[in-house]
Length: 111
Length: 114
Image 1 (cartoon, chains in turn cyan, purple):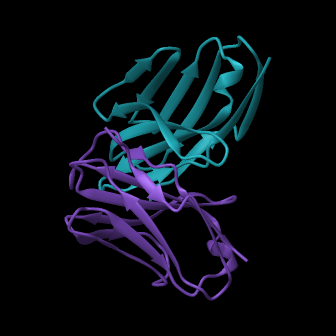
Image 2 (cartoon, each protein chain N blue to C red):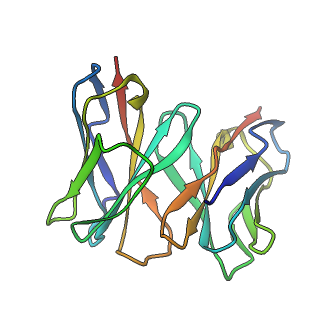
Image 3 (tube, rainbow over the protein chains, first blue to last red):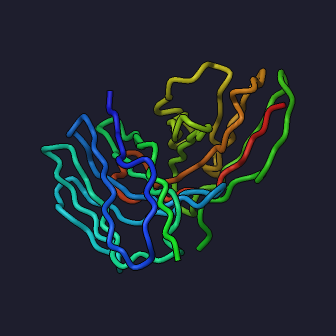
């Protein structure tokens, strides 16, 4: 059974800091890994998708890497802003086409 | 192009009642996925429908059921509501079985059971 773990559970940083969120998964037989953002009480916003054959993806100030063999992914956020405050979720798509989510990292960026 | 839409936004029920939640997929998408996000439990996979058929089911009791209509919209029914069914229910859609690309979610339906 696939399990996804995200560390840390919560993170508070001052504005402008670069930060890294971590995600690990137990079964490396995945099609892809996706990072989402969730604002309080809202749905999920897709940030980045990394296919299993890829090593990283970039979008603006966000960079996500994937090491499938070790079951790890990181989301790097450069020059953080208060508007980045949200919960960040990673999810892996397994061979049964089911997305398994981590419990998320609650990020607070202080002005 | 419209994204995944869900209704109602909020729903309040009492224990023992039934709740019905609805999801309209992105135009052209034939697969619909349902997830439950309960406080402290994270996002849990509920159901996957494709081309009108149930393709996969998560570890939930039979009280949770659904269907997919010919226009690919979907309905999630929760019978005999219990307090722990209070959660945000999220729906996503994809172009069909075997799709391994980006999934897009709706804004969710917040179910509160009193």
